[in-house]
Amino acid sequence: MVIIEVSLLSGFILASRSRMLLEHRTIIKKLEVEANVVYIYLEKLNDESQTFILQLEQVIQMKNLKPAIIKIYDYYQPGGLQISSYSGAGS
Image (cartoon, rainbow, N blue to C red):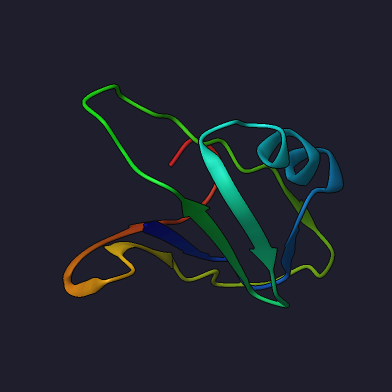
């Protein structure tokens, strides 16, 4: 099982429409949304490229917004962790 862990930017939440679209993707086994993190559980991956678009809603205006972290790892072997970051629209 693969987990994509997306930390949300400060002052943002996952848009409800985005959550519904993600939950209907057949590759996604489970979706968990916490206060500042979205966990996307995938049963397995293959050689086919996958794109996930998360639409966020800003609920609090923040200054000097810092990049947020995206982690991708195998649930059973978290040592193979891949880390990236994003900082806003189009990142």
